[in-house]
Length: 184
Image 1 (cartoon, helix red, strand yellow):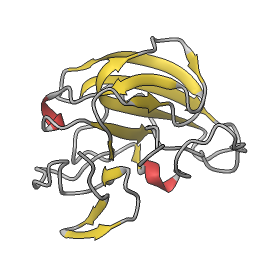
Image 2 (tube, one colour; image 1 turned 135 degrees about the vertical axis):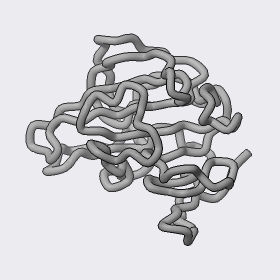
Image 3 (cartoon, helix red, strand yellow; image 1 turned 90 degrees about the vertical axis):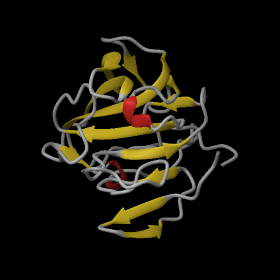
Image 4 (cartoon, helix red, strand yellow; image 1 turned 45 degrees about the horizontal axis):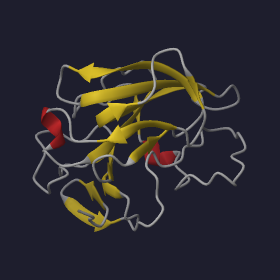
C-alpha cells in the first residue's frame, strides 16, 4: 500500500512531497494514521514486505538483532566522516523482515543490508522501514519521545540512492534514502 508522505509538526500535517516517507522525525502521527503516544524519534519510509533496505552511508555494522522494546529486527551501522559534524554517528534500520549483514561487516552506501518487514510491536502491522540517526550506539533505535542524542535524518538526506552519482564528503554527513526508490 502506497501513501503520500506526511510531515507532522505539532498537530498540523503537511505534505512534504516525498512519496517515500510515511511520517517524519517528531511526528505525532503513526504509520496507520493514528495518533502516537509520544513524538516519533525517527523517520518511517513507505515500502512493501521484502523490499530491499539500503545503507544510507558507508560504515560498519554494529549489530543485527531483535529489539526488546518493540522496534522488531534492527540493523545498526556506525559511520565516520572525519570532516563532518557530527563526525561519528549511527543509523538504525528497524521493523526488518530479514537482516542480510552481521556485526563487524563494512558496508557501502546503497548496499542491501536487509529486507523491509513489519516486525515488532510498534510496526502497527504495516510494512515500512524505520530509520533513526543517533550520536550514540542506539542499538534498538530510540523510544518515541526520547530525543537526547538523536538527529533528524532528513536534515542530511539527499534523496534516493543513485549508483552513478558521486557522494562527495562535505562538512555534514550525506545520507540517501534507506529504501530502493525505483518505480515510486
